Image 1 (cartoon, rainbow, N blue to C red):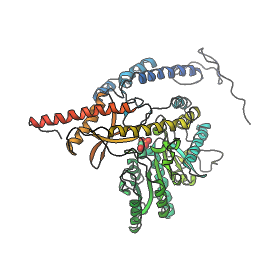
Image 2 (image 1 turned 90 degrees about the horizontal axis):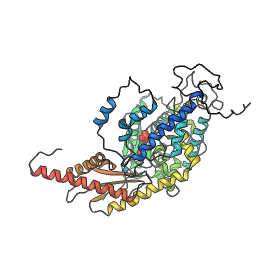
Image 3 (image 1 turned 180 degrees about the horizontal axis):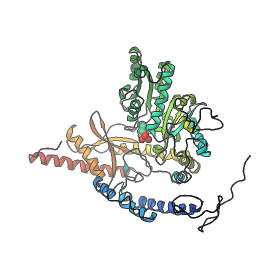
Image 4 (image 1 turned 90 degrees about the vertical axis):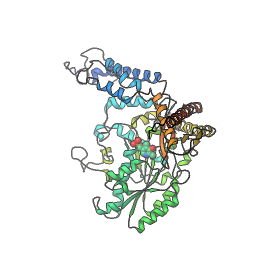
Length: 523
Ligand SMILES: *Cc1c(COP(=O)(O)O)cnc(C)c1O
């Protein structure tokens, strides 16, 4: 039986307008909560808030102001949290000095530091709806259509990956959680195949193999899963920073000889530092031969699933047992939006626990589709809605085209940097990351060069004129552009490196003059 659709609502303007649940006396909290009579006030509040956010975005003339942590700390500390301002407008104004005036702005073309992206406008609008309705994804009776939207997006993602008809998965708060969940499933699946309990000593014979450039969340997951961080065995990479399949093959064979169990191989599709994509097809073959679970950490490279030009770089991903995709990185979605997808939906039962008050063990999953049965979280935001609204508004091709532009920018930027005598580029960008360092005149590889690069980066950030990331390669300091903004141009990248070269030269000059004057060098 279906009910008549609800009648359209007239805007509510009077204080005691009747609602579908009758008129009620005005309570002291009347204005504080969202309900039928304050629904128009919500529109005003969100308008005021987006006004403030939009103005902040428009005003930002650099990625950052260079504000000092101590200054912001004391401004925040001076706020009297026990004395409310009483009105949203005042509270919004107060956010200027506390946060918005000195925030880090990822939409700015010279923000080229971490894996943060400018975000899709329909996605932000979706977040307003998700917050206003406040569905919780744990059970059907808290989410209804939201569960169906999330499920459809999981299915859609699984189809793009090519995981086959039995695939399933769940949205998570990020790649860290997605990787943790995938490895939890791999752990329990492997122990089940060995006929061992999760708390058996066999747990300590399990090993996870990941390239030496794998994400640190893999080590964290191993630790949280009771295996210890040392259970993650690093596999050597080739000159292009991709996992070397020969080295993987040797490591797998050695493990067998030592009586260890290769529980999972984590192939990274887009390493955080270099954007390298491990050879997925070769790794899949080795996983099959050795009975190891293949997890693909595509937190970064997952954007290629939407790419009109470069999707083939993920060839082989369809052979995975599980895949992590971060929509909040290369899909231009606001934080948080990530998914873990598995080839065999049955494996998700390793994350299933029942509670009589929530998802009783005898509930029929067809009748009561409860997402909590496959999630590590319980109460969970409707984070799938933003991707849904983005796909329904602009579509996947638009997302993929923006990511393609970032990949092309990385190629062009690396070429421009290579053309400069004072800049060294580590490798051709496999994705949208450029690893480089500046080399002030005549400074050899060593501590001074490291310091010049580290300091140049800090000074650039403190100046507010640009933001780049840093990493170590073979123990030495390098700098990194992570390009996720299709609006950034090669000219922006040239500007950033001009500034870095100038700062680095200053650092070297200062070191020279302090040596000459006999001052002890800071280390
Ligand atoms: C960013 C990243 C993660 C972690 O994802 P979060 O969403 O930050 O938790 C995992 N793996 C790789 C390769 C990443 O780049």
